[in-house]
Length: 173
Image (cartoon, rainbow, N blue to C red):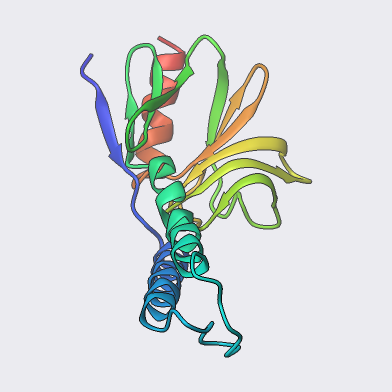
């Protein structure tokens, strides 16, 4: 069995939120650096070290979100690899009970700890339907729920039905 790769396409919401936030952070950093004597939005005087410190903090927001990008999903004989920027998160088949295609699974969910739309929707979430779960999502309209023995995960492969068939086939093999 060869590995089956699924892309993690960015949905419209993620594209808009990521572009807006990135431009806002870059613009804010640029404005601070251009006008270092006063904060451009208040005209209040700024101490000497503050512009560099504030600029660094503003730029750390998008840089801090980058590692958590979801680049894709790979179904292997052992489980599901969630490909991140510098590492993979593994959902092992021995822990997976079922998988179901559920568009809009993140709808009406609450983020309890994680990223809510800067390059991904990742982290810990809660909803009345799923309870506590982990999200590894880039497209809110293509979600798949992976039910495991001890937790639940929501993913967003480019072909949710094909992904679910592939995982189900290996679960029952």
